[in-house]
Image (cartoon, rainbow, N blue to C red):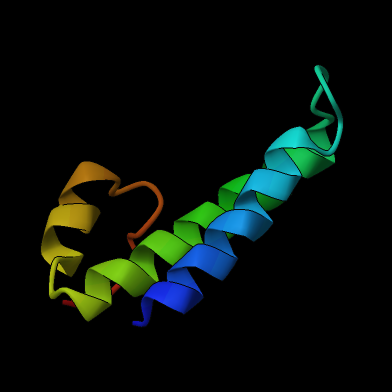
Length: 66
């Protein structure tokens, strides 16, 4: 995964964090959680750390086959 892709994804995540100012509405929170969860899995696959990620968050990644 390129540093540019990581950078652009983090910009997208940061925009979601701040889009509702001090009060994040529930839909924004769910979108943010989903985007971060997906992005983290992409990074884990890229660096061969899927097993560690699944162990840390089994409730999020129970569908991942290692």
